[in-house]
Image 1 (cartoon, each protein chain N blue to C red):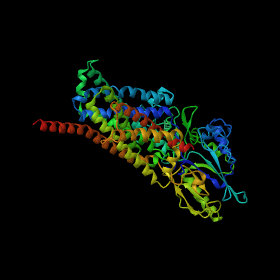
Image 2 (tube, chains in turn purple, orange; image 1 turned 180 degrees about the vertical axis):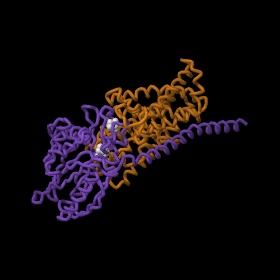
Image 3 (cartoon, each protein chain N blue to C red; image 1 turned 90 degrees about the vertical axis):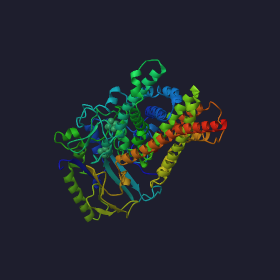
Image 4 (cartoon, rainbow over the protein chains, first blue to last red; image 1 turned 45 degrees about the vertical axis):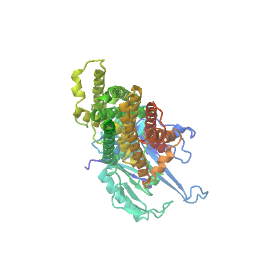
Length: 305
Length: 309
Ligand code: SF4
Ligand code: SF4
């Protein structure tokens, strides 16, 4: 499957300029969105408000932010301390991961979500019914409901550009090559070389999130300093994968993402068992009545004799 | 607190009510099955009165779903393959991995059985002569198949929410079982109301016993559910308890635990714990129905509010 397309996101060189986020908005013709006041609870819930705790004011992927550059501001080991002598900023340009096993696609009841010829996960907007099942199924909180259209949205890996031989708009705009578009196999070897280079320079915290390419190391700074990290393959692999410098949770990524289908057969099995128990006890309730009546009739007959 | 990274699906009240009603229709149909298989002639008046209930409800359910989705045509994409999704083969839409798709088909098929029961009840009431239908409507094989689909409708929404990555919902395998229990409880509550209104003392005797037993089984499932969450490493139980505040908390503790479970357990115990005045079976049924609706509400909105908080 060498035709699979994806992106390698090297967070070690992301400067948080948000050029990718702007390029995504521009190419996909999404409104810029002005942050609303923090007092607006609905806006906070929908990630449309000022965060108040970060220089990042997008705060989360949403139906109109298909790409989001996360700012992870680690101001010393104790955030409440006034000691700001050892700050660390981690940046990560996040989007749909175009999972090899995609929870969203698995549960979609209409076929609106589909796998493209490039291995990415796209949405037929005219087929989506807005049931929002995929929203709760995505382990990364990527796909989001668009209240305006009544359908869901997420990064579609610039399917329209890929079809005419172009790469993604975000990667094109990235001034530091933190985002690289290409075939997944080429990107994997590029990522492996990059981790090895960083390790050779003493930055041993670099590892890959999305594929297990055999790298491991130790976090060198921040609150998790000294913690061992290693490459992690997630849900069968991510076509958009990351080079990280701290634990996945620090970037808002689950250490162990899982497919929603893991629960299907066991849950259905338990449901069948409970149906059987209820059926048998329900039948017993009606049968017991007959037995009670027979017993009463028997007693009356005995008394009459 | 477990760290979850998912977004809430933002399902709203029409979905909650639609799934409660679908469970109610399926539960009522299940009670009819019990009477068909284990009842006697004296249960028939109640049986045929119950037969009028599932079909109208199964007409309201898709209307609520359509209201929630916003466009009538969209609902059909759950069943008929849209030309806009050429990757899928065949004229019908079926995704075996999607409990929502299973549930949609189960509802359609179940609605057919509900219609059959409705027609049979019409015939038995003497309003319309449909004698040719009786052997079909009373076929034990068809009734068993109808029961199966009723059970799927009762429980699929529980399986559906377990097959996500939402905190609490996906941390247990018991959701489907729990939803079946509460759906069947609601069906038996409907039977209790009908028995009471009709003065069907004979049927009421069995319904009282079944309502108590279903409440006991539901309580066991609820305890297993909470116990199961407590064993999760990531603090799912704490997350659920924390989410049970304000209306959601009232719905869970007062509605689901109090009205749906404790009311029948206390008032219908074989050795009465409290003296239940005559004619209170209908009231118990109504309280149980309110409790089951509250259960649905609490289950849907506890996990959603937890993710949002
Ligand atoms: S990241 Fe989420 S939305 Fe994207 S393909 Fe994976 S499961 Fe689907
Ligand atoms: S909201 Fe749309 S894409 Fe998501 S599961 Fe429903 S139909 Fe599929």
